[in-house]
Image 1 (cartoon, one colour):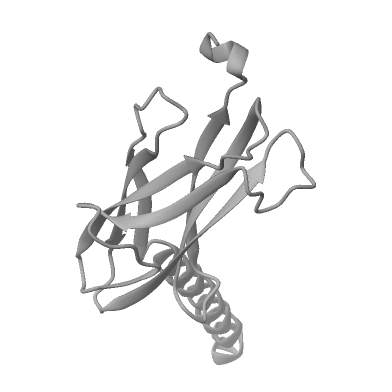
Image 2 (cartoon, helix red, strand yellow):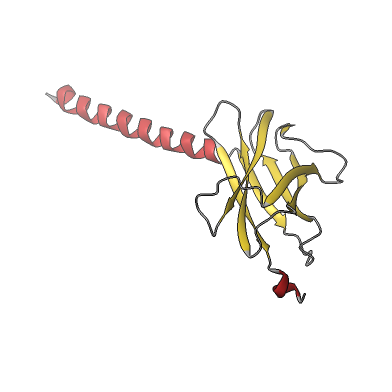
Length: 159
């Protein structure tokens, strides 16, 4: 009789341990890397490029390769996805090269710049949301940061 009662308890403990381990493992997968904006551009002239400083950190115990990409949406017109109002490029921190993929060893971090430039045909008075995405290849594990870019009307510039 005693062994029959303990069997359900043992199974219940194993079940809860498995769920707890799965949640912990899922949490660890989410935290294996970090993407953040360190410094937004302070450039006030909308005709000049804006450089935003970002950081990507590998928090795992193994070498990881990250794909970097961007999207741009006109927040005034939701139908315009990846609109041409804003040109976005990912550059090394010293601006020596562009890239869209980077490999980091365990615990390594890299700083890089995101260059945003207003297209010459950009719609004036538009707010653009640039998303920078770091993603592990063949995975849904990704991090996203947002950069807002406003393209002022000429009367807002005092012209």
